[in-house]
Length: 531
Ligand SMILES: Nc1ncnc2c1ncn2[C@@H]1O[C@H](COP(=O)(O)OP(=O)(O)OP(=O)(O)O)[C@@H](O)[C@H]1O
Image (cartoon, rainbow, N blue to C red; front, side):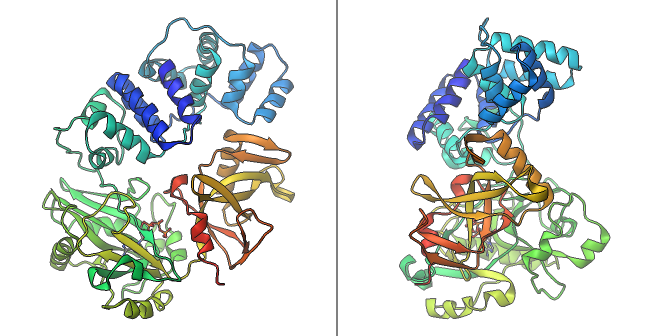
């Protein structure tokens, strides 16, 4: 466990990619497979659900430290993070013997949830007495369900690939979807010879690069090398038909069960061993695509009632074929995959499962004209896809380009929060957002509205659990949450560190599917300036 705590602190103390990868690689090189599986689980952003109520931890800690409750609360207020407060306030313990990460998790931590309060307290006190502060901090993060470390899944993938010799593409595929940490899981993850057989497992998604709106797409090459499709504004998904079952995955790697019954029913007509990539859209029977706001009515519902099914029917617009007849065809050129997709969906045409049509055009000028009509079909612009490119993992430059029509939206990272006013005076509701400038996050806009009450409470909880610093009423938080902001206009501004002032910024949606490093660059905002 000490080694895992050291890894945590090593990752926390550097922003350099290479140092993070090196720290993880050396951890994986020495860790037994079950420990490595748990470490992978946590580093990829998974958590244990909360094991002991925070309220009880606070009371027990105050008693263990022999301080009054109000002093504990003051300390918590000053520190801003419960796990850190617990590890600082309770006197440091002395380690008896180091146990492995998996022993900690499986034998000491997970069982806590099922114990009665008295035994829970005995076990937690025992943990405090046996853990020095740096180790205790990590253990408390796990117990409070707030464990989080500043690495992306991509970096974890690279570290495992580097250490094991299995290619990053294969590792990233094996890390997709739901898996449970086990010795067998990690051994298969790093085994070059193992066959991947998990029926529900999706492929890593291919992502797009933005085209500079002013310059247009000429810089990316000749138009004849590309096809164009509408850039739909819906939910990205992979529809998998394997072993007579259907699985629909979101880009955020969530298995969307019972959410899209029309699409599930349509997918039953697909042959076994098929994986489609595409966009879930709200659309009428005549094919008219509805705005995202309509689709939003179905988001977040675990099951969908009859009324909503009739009012907001959905269609899966397939734009790629990743697996055909059980064979992974991602290495084939787009043109070939598209040919097979057309044949496949031509054979089993269904009102809720369609192929996205290519947008007619042969030159950039022709497509520029068509792009102006995007809003009329409720699209955000065009997607340009290279005909000879394989289906890549992640955002590989040159394969897919997004050429949006209305650029006044951007994905930003929440970095500061402050309490609101009036009925929101007890909640952190005023947010400051930042964009990347190289590896720095630069604040550029404040936004107060756009989230619903439930989301506001979630963000409030996040702020309290992830405060890094307190400046008067303002808290800086670990950069984690990504929100899509919309604004009416942009102006150059000397007063702002970012160099721009946004007009009427508001939160459009919480991008659960994005990691902080997926947020936009400041340069992309500057490119939107009209002058
Ligand atoms: N025809 C299409 N081909 C591929 N992706 C499409 C298409 N139409 C809509 N999309 C959406 O566009 C996204 C591609 O852009 P990107 O990979 O940059 O994701 P993104 O950051 O979510 O995009 P954005 O925030 O600009 O909508 C896909 O994830 C998908 O949801």
